[in-house]
Structure formats: C-alpha cells, structure tokens
Length: 113
Image (cartoon, rainbow, N blue to C red; front, side, top):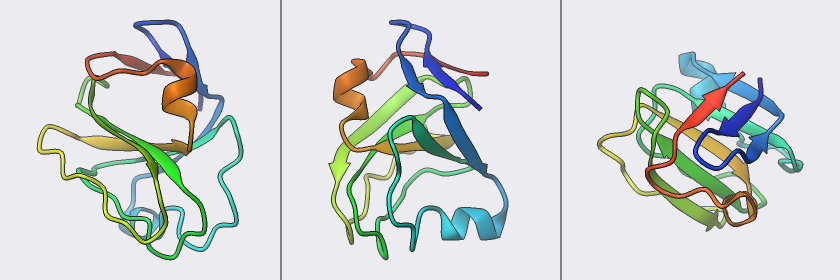
C-alpha cells in the first residue's frame, strides 16, 4: 500500500504494511533491524504506541477514522512510549525524519492507495 498526503501532495511511503490483527499489532516493529525509507506500518485500531525491543527511532502519525492527522511524534527513540491520542483510530509508523521531510502537519488528510 502507498500513503500520500492529500493536503500537500507528498508521498509519505510507497510500501506500507498493515497490522490489523491482535498478534500483528502486538508485534508491530519489535525485533526488526530497521524501517527503510519509503516503508511504513499502519496499525489499526491503535491510539498509542511504544518502541520497546526496537533499535531505531521512528516518526509516528496518529490518524482519525477519515485519515486526518490528529497527532504526531517525531523521532521517538527506542524504549519509549508515544502519546495517547483519544481521537486516533490508527497509527502510521514511518522512518525517523519522514514527518519533517514531507511537511506533514496536524490537520492534514492522508490517502491510502
């Protein structure tokens, strides 16, 4: 799956996997070596994340049901807990630096293709 920012036209990732079962959500990116540029993980349902058992930082976008960005965390380091976002229905995990590079902002809308 590909994720594009409808508000500014930027491509956030062109290879996004989905974690939508209990075990896929539980595992997430734990124990992975890295999250390459252009890759991401969409976790749903989800309102908060952690980076335990990870060896790299990630950017996190918290998304509403209609894929509006309702929160974000930039470059969360390993062994940290992200913010709890009450309005979030899903979370998109991306390589660190993606938010800054693509100009994503709270209030922007995303499109999955």
